[in-house]
Image (tube, rainbow, N blue to C red; front, side, top):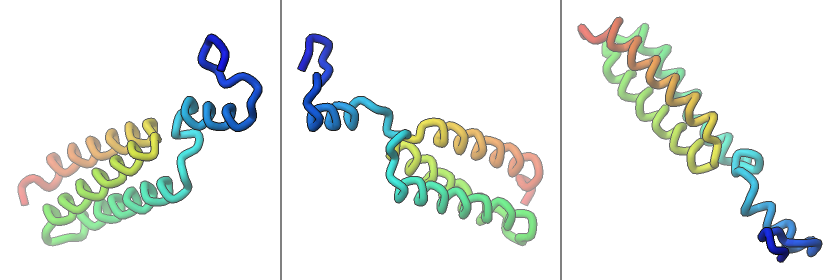
Length: 104
């Protein structure tokens, strides 16, 4: 390795260096993205169900759990922008629930 800590011209070392130094969001496995997307879709489905449910508190509990799982999956995959976006969406859903459903 050179003085700057770069791997020089060795192709194997260069690949290892890139894997360690590049943000995970660029190389996040498709499985992690799929897991995040599945949890997000389930959270949105629970959000929609709140409006038709006789027990919106149960749907709200589900959406919080699914968003927490999606946020966790995003963070584990290094998808920090997605984690931030999902956190903001969860916060928005909380506000809606408190305004429209807290009397149940």
